[in-house]
Length: 82
Length: 149
Image 1: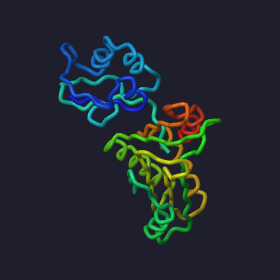
Image 2: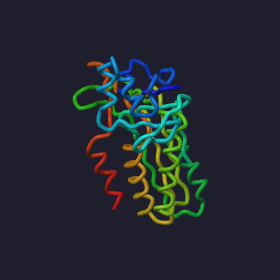
Image 3: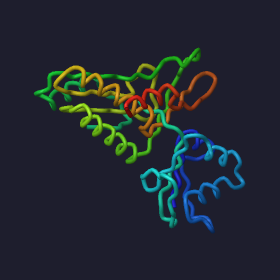
């Protein structure tokens, strides 16, 4: 799966993009967020920050979303358009 | 009509094209946002703007469609840049054509309030003290919320 990090999250993740397999035991967005932050305290903190939104295959997730492992998941810090 | 591009645009040309798209309108209003030369007391050397290709265009198109319906616009155009920009360069162009002045002006306010808080762009200012991320301010969210009434 493809994981994208936008805004200050790209700094916390030290990359704007990662390609990886769905971690063992993970079946939804909350699980993926937890797995990404495991053993990476700065990233865990950034992912838990206020206003962070998640999109799966280009659709913003409201609540929870199951994952199969072939998705594009974007973690987005608060935007600043205009 | 929306466009997201890396290169510069000419606001005058965008305005002329919008006017051609809306020959029977009675009012056209436009707004050009520029890269600020200073951020508080600090000079800004560069502004770096990232976006989420595909997703950004879709969100912008939704915002423009909502403005068209809400203000009965005859035409509407939003051009937004990404990449590396210099202070003073146009970063966003918004224009609306309608029958009367008030709707065109209100549409611009509405579009900018929504773009600031919802359009998936991320800004990073580079200055003498290093780089810092810019995120929508509380005031931007308050401005956005007045359209929910």
